[in-house]
Image 1: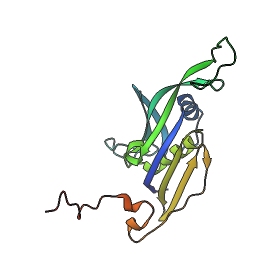
Image 2 (image 1 turned 90 degrees about the horizontal axis):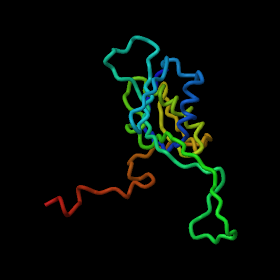
Image 3 (image 1 turned 180 degrees about the vertical axis):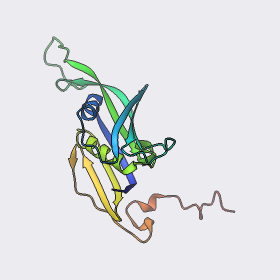
Image 4 (image 1 turned 60 degrees about the horizontal axis):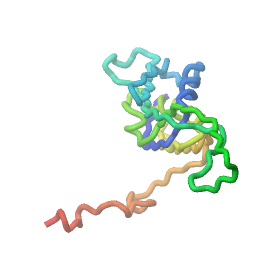
Length: 188
């Protein structure tokens, strides 16, 4: 299967433990990907595709997913809001723990890097998105000449569509760009 990823935007956040559990649990990887190498450098997580076939040069970088790692405090119950009235005199500490989160945030070049095996690694990212309780993944892909729209919101697949317009400025939000040709500060 060959495919391409044309547009991708991700705001996914999920516990690092969930990502590791998915990858260590013998995931159903696309046929082009033999394995996924996991590397952590400081606060960056890199998931790199290992090609199933040897037809790629050893110098060709394969696609990789990149996530930043943050530490968030997770409470067992909702903490009281600042400034809210306190009815009991004694203040109890709410049980909590620090949890590391993998944050796949950004556009295609930020989250999904390199072109060799890019579409199969997008499929891995889709599987991760289906496990995320927070964030959205949207993308436009092409497989065998057919365009497809993808949208996953908080771990749930949602309907998505692609709109083709003659002039991109005619689409939604196209009018908020800068018209460089008629800019009085540059043209003289």
